[in-house]
Image 1 (cartoon, rainbow, N blue to C red):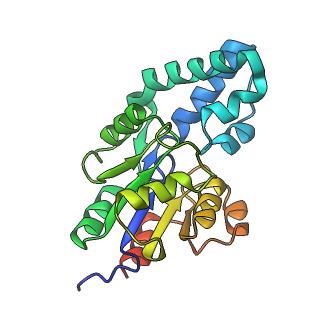
Image 2 (spheres, rainbow, N blue to C red):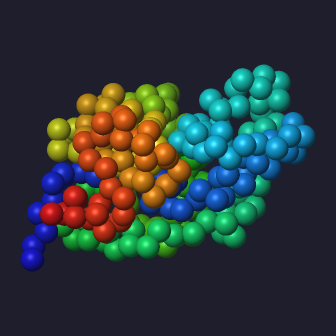
Length: 215
C-alpha cells in the first residue's frame, strides 16, 4: 500500500521525541544541582525543565547560573553514550517518511554538537537533513522562531507542515508558529498537561505516530 502523507514537511523535537535522553537529562540536572548547590533536585521539577534552554532554566540562580550550566553540560557529554537509549521504531519511521518524500527537520534546545552526538548514539545520523540547534536563532522554544527557521530552511509551506514534540513548550511553539502540532507521550511530558494544550493530534506510541503521519 502506497503511503499517503498527511503533511509534506515534518519537524521533530529531539530529546524525548526522537532520542530517549530522558534518563540522561534528569541525571544531568541532578548532578548539577548537587555539585553546585549541594542539594537534591526533585525529579518532577527536573522533568518540567525539559525542552527549555539551559540559559533560561538556570538564569534565576544569578551568579551560580553559569556554573550550573557547565556542570550540567560536563556530566551530560561525559555520560551521553552510557545513559541515552533509542525509541523502538523511530529509525524505521524516519526511513519510511523519507521514502514517502516527506521533508524532515529537527528543532532542539541542544547545541549542535550535542544534538549530532545524540543522533549518532541512536543510529539516526543522516536521516534528518535539517537541524536547527540552540544558538542558531535569536529566540528559542516556546518562541516560534526556531520552528519557522527550520521550515524556511526546508523551503516548506507552514500550512503543510507539522511539529512533533513531547513537551508543552513544543506544542506552544508550534501553535505560535501557526503550524500543526503532534504531542507524543513517550517522552518527559505529562500526558494530561499535553492534552490540555489541545494539539492537532496526540500519539502514545511510535506506531500510532506512523499511522497519523503516513495514513
